[in-house]
Each structure stands twice: as C-alpha cells, then as structure tokens.
Amino acid sequence: MLNKNLKEILDGNIELPTLPDVIMRLLSAVDNPESTAPDIARIIGSDQSLMAKILKLVNSPFYGMPRQISTLTQATVVMGFTAIRNIALTIAVFDEFELGAAVPEKFGYTREKLWEHSIATAITANVIAHKINYAKKEDAFIAGLIHDIGKVVFDRFCHEDFVTALTLADASGRSLFDAEVDIFGESHAFIGSWVTEKWQLPSHLVDSIRYHHTPDKGEVELKLVEIVHAANNLVHAEGYGNGGDDIVPEINGLFQKTFGFSQHDLHELKLEVKQNFESAVEFFQTVA
Image (cartoon, rainbow, N blue to C red; front, side):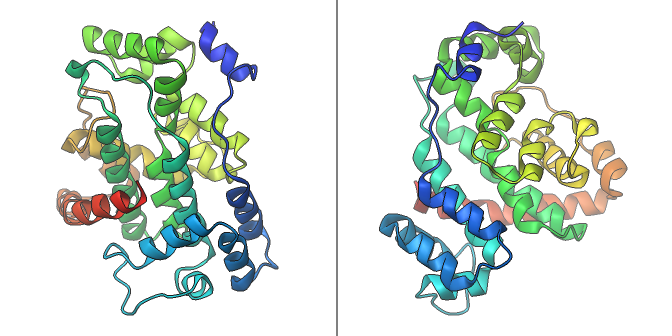
C-alpha cells in the first residue's frame, strides 16, 4: 500500500519542481532531427544565466578543450547536441532541487554526500561505457548523475518518512531500497522515474533510473540499466559520498558476469574513476 505522502505526490496534490521552459524546449529540439546548432544556441541563449553556466562548464578543466569555446553554436558543434542537452539538464537539476531539513548526523547522508555519490556514479558509468564501447556514452554519464533523484524527492517532500526509512535500513541492516518499499510502498527508483517521465526525459534515461537496483527488469535499453546498476554498486563499495546505504555490495562477480571484466580490468576502472573524481567535483562546484 502506498504511503499517504507519496500518494499525495502521485495524485498531484504536492507540487514538485518542474524543468524550466527553456530546458523543455531544448529537450524537444535535440530530439528533432531537423534541428541545427544555431537552433540549439538560440534556445539556450534565451536564458542568459543558463548560457553563461554552459560556456563556463564547457571551458572547465573537466572537458579539457584544446582552445577556448566562446559561443553556444561553437559549443554545440564541438560537444554535440546530446552533450549540450545533458550539461543543461545537469544545471537545471542542481538549480531546481534542494534537500529539505537536515538528516540526523549518524546517517552520514547530506546533500553534498549524495551529490558526491551521484557524481562518482556518473563518472563510473561513463568510464564503463567507454570500456565496453557503449554507443550512448554521454547518456551513461547523465543517467549515473540523476539515478538517485528519487531520494531528493523523498527527502524534500516526505522528509520525516525518509528519515524513518533511513533509520529502518540502519537498524535492520537492510538496503535503503527495501526500507523505502516498507515505508512508502515504493522506492526512490520508482519516484525518480516518475518525476523524470513527467519531465519528458528520454525513455531510456527514465528506465535506467527506474531499474538501477533491479536491472533484470529493464524494459527500454538494458545495457544502460546494467551500466548504471554496476556503477552505483562500485561507488557504494569504494565509498564515494553517501547514498544512504551501509551495505557494501560484492562487485567482482557482478562486473565479470555483466561485462566480462577481469580483476585487472576492474582495477583499471577503479583507478580511472579515482583520477577523474576530483576534477569532476570541481566541475560540479561550478554548477552549484
């Protein structure tokens, strides 16, 4: 049975943040095969703050551009439509969502720690995508970044119930996912996919959020779901940030079974994630 507060959200009685109109128009334009780089630049240019942030991020050390990118059209041509969409979406998510009241200190779960976890998951998903030659590498990054957006929804709009779920997970030694299902009747993966579907994000991104704990149920693009699931587990095991779970997953067998990774492959993956993490945190501090 659905928790009362979650039902209020699903019934539309609690107003959740929506993506700005400029982002919605950008999403539509990127999906339109007739759109051009100047079209994308004009849409973004209608929001001066968004334009400035995108140019700042594109020129950050994280992307390592060989020369300064000075215009949105140039950025769109160099980066590609999908990458620009994902940068804009990242900015919008950071701008629209704030966590609610402070979670008790003992859980180690803060907005900063959650975003560190999310950033590390994004990096890991991106590295995995490159190593297995997954075609939609930029989507692996954004899927990793927003995979836990449902936790932000729970924390902000159902805060007391979310703390109860954290408490239950901590006391019982179970996963936060399972504790949420007990308290809310659904998990952060469900509400995250519900919100992003309302935002009209591409179905394969929504699917990766919905099933990042249950990859065998993936419906749209199983490989992306597997990438996010594996990335999330590795980040938990390596201790980047804090997603609200104390359970340390076993990752060796997971990576061997899913991607055919040897112990050496997994070691190389961990090193690459570690090398990229600091620059990525600096990158996202530019957004905040």
